[in-house]
Image (cartoon, rainbow, N blue to C red; front, top):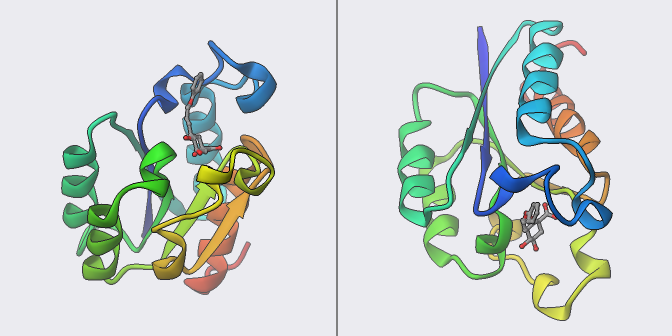
Length: 147
Ligand code: CA2
């Protein structure tokens, strides 16, 4: 069975509790359930993880090799700072979709640059929680799984 890891970075555990005008009302648990259901309907196993720690995110990316077929990564603010995450993605050699709930290009200038984007298969941003299932479908398309 195809397996996809959805990896969430710092502060995304607070989704649905604060700043709903930017990040919406949906909690990470809601998103996880939707993604697992979306995957199950397509014969894809979906694992959702979140960590506030850059080191744990690196460990999860490294451990994905041989276990998962692709990664949807919302690296949160580490997107704009972490060369280490970029190196881990390059090394793991799995298709990675960079995802953001908000349109990072319509926000602060420091959010316009991503260290991840050049090593990602593609980037989805600005569609809120719906972006996660869009990313799953995009990965499934790349992995040649029927929608
Ligand atoms: O739009 C996204 O998904 C971001 O990755 C979210 C990050 C931000 O640093 C990126 O530039 C764009 C921030 C996540 C913070 O999540 C919160 C959720 C609820 C309440 C407060 C913060």
